[in-house]
Image (cartoon, rainbow, N blue to C red; front, side, top):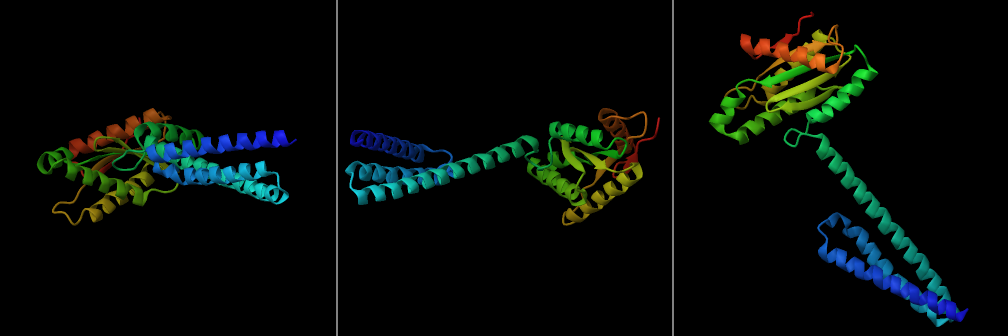
Length: 258
């Protein structure tokens, strides 16, 4: 039995040294500092495991009791280390998921994610949604005159005005360039128009400190026949937007029924 105990102690010692070497290597070369808390616990666990293996090899009853204590402590430190490592990776996964779903400038959804979420929303609530496509007025002139940094600030103000007026079930995304697209839950065209006009007012208030207020043009469509799917809905709203652009901008138009 003594030979088996000494063998187990030797294995524990090699395991402890292996964990310690791996921990030191990870801490020295880690490019992910969020993992360091976990590896600190692993390092402490390797030290307590060395103590456990050394005391277990002595064979003295008191040493045996201390060895059992160090074994429990080692297990506790390893468990905490793995829990922290799991939590960090989970947070990192959620951060990566957020980056994959969002437009990096405005933090609204990107259009790919919008299509996925909108399709699920329309499946849950058929006939109860409206779409809005909006486009900034004179955005190219701003970029050409004041530069892209100013243009980026404008886009962020628009995103802030949109978020300020969204309800919980609404979905908003950057469509591309200076265009945005919304899916408004439980809305007909008239209700969607009112929400869009509130966004225009919010944008005016947010940009009121500048010499000229930022405005947008928008087209609205609801799920009236024959536009019974997302593609038809966005197409109708886009056509309404084009009509606004041709007729003077800075307003909201409802797509006619065909």
